[in-house]
Amino acid sequence: MNSRIAKPSILVLTSTYPRWEGDVEPPFVHELSRRLAEQFDVHVLAPHAPGSRKHETLDGVFVHRFRYAPDRFEKLAYQGGVLANLRKSFWVVGLIPIFLIAQSVAAFRLMTRRQIRIIHAHWLFPQGLVAILVKALLGHNVKVLCTSHGGDLYGLRGAFFGAIKKMVAARCDHLTVVSRSMREDLLKLGVAEEKISVIPMGVDLQHRFVPTKTPAPAQSLLFVGRLVEKKGLRYLLEAMPKIIERFPDSHLTVVGDGPERTNLEKLTHHLGVQGRVEFLGALPNEELPLLYQQAGIVVFPSVVGKDGDREGFGLVLVEAMGCGCALVVTNLLSMEDIVKNEETGIVVDQRNAPQLVDAVLRLRNNPKLRLEFAEKALRHVRKYFDWQIIVREYAVILGLAAKGS
Image 1: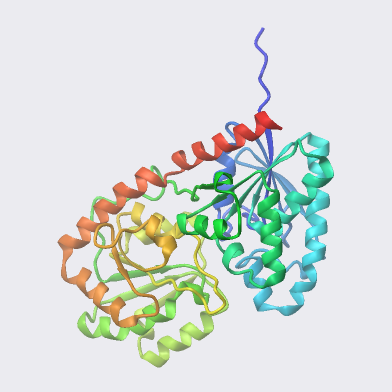
Image 2: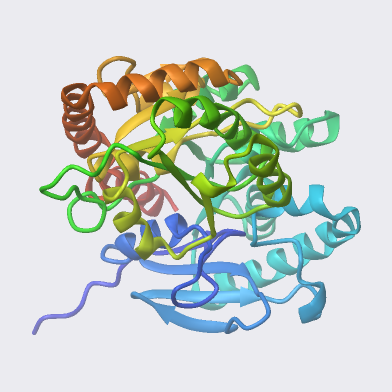
C-alpha cells in the first residue's frame, strides 16, 4: 500500500503579493512560492488590502491575508511598497507597530495550528523582524531564511533601522540577497560569510519572456519601472530631445506608476517631447512580454537616490533581455551581475543624459550591434536567471532547513 509522503511546510512572510488575479503588484514572491509548492506545502502570509480575500489558494499556494487596520486605512503595503508609502504619507508611520503586531500574531497562529517550522521572510524589515520574533516565541527548532531585495537594505537608513537590520541578520539562520553587491554590504554589517547566498529572483524565460522571430523597430524605446527617483527616468526624458532631433521617428513608452509621475509628465511638456512620450501607467505582468517584444531599445537609467536608496537587482532587465531587447543601463553595482558592458548591452554613467543620447543613437545607427547584444544577452539570462535554476537553489536551502528543524 502506497502512502503519500507529507511535504515539508514553509511560511512565506511578505508585504508585496498579488492582491487578486491580474493585479499589477510585482508577482515575484508568488512566482517563487508557486514553484516551490511542488516540493513544499507553501503558506503565504501577506497584508490584507481593500478588495482582497482573507484566505484563498492561488496556483497551489495557500494565501492568508492579515488585517492591520480598517479598509480605508490599509495604506502601508502595496502600491509601491512599504518604503515608498512611508515617504508619501507621514501618518502611515503610525501603522508600523500595528502592522508588526498583526503579522506576528497571524504568523504565530499559522505556525502553531499547522505545525510549520520553516519561515521564509522577504525583506529584512518588517518581515525579517516578524520572523525572528516568532522564532523567539516558538523556540530554536524554527528555522528562518530571510531574503533582502535591496530597498530594505539601502532605503532604511539611520541608527534605528541599522540596529534592526543587524539584529535580524544575526538571528536568521540564513540570508539570501539578489546581487553580489548586496552581499558585500551585508558583510559590512558583520554578517558571517557562510550565512549569505546570492540568489536573484527569477524570470520565466522559457514560455513568457521570450523573443520573437522578427526584430522590433529601432525607433521604439521602452522604460519599465516605478516612477520614483532611483529609477532615473528624468535623465532619459532629458535625453529625448537630442534623440528625436537625430531620429524624428523615435517614440518612448513608459510603463509604471508612482509619486513622480505628475512631475515627469510636466517635464515632457517642458522639454517639448510630450507627443513622443507615452505614459501607460502600471500594467499587469502578463502584458509586459508583448511590450518588450515591440521595443527596439530598452533603457534603464537607474541611479542611487539622494537618500541612498538604489536597486538591489534589476529584474526588469532580465525580462527585457529574455525578450531579445538591446539594452542601455547605468553603472550601478547591482547591474553588473546582469549586463556586461559592450557584450550584452551598453553601460553609461548615472545621471548623465548626454551619455544616454550617445548610447541610444549608437544602437539606432547599428542594427548589427543591436542584434549581437540581444543574442548574447538572451544566452546570458537563460543560463543564470531562469526560474528553474533559481527555484532549485532555494529548494536546497529550504530543504536543509526542513531537515534541521
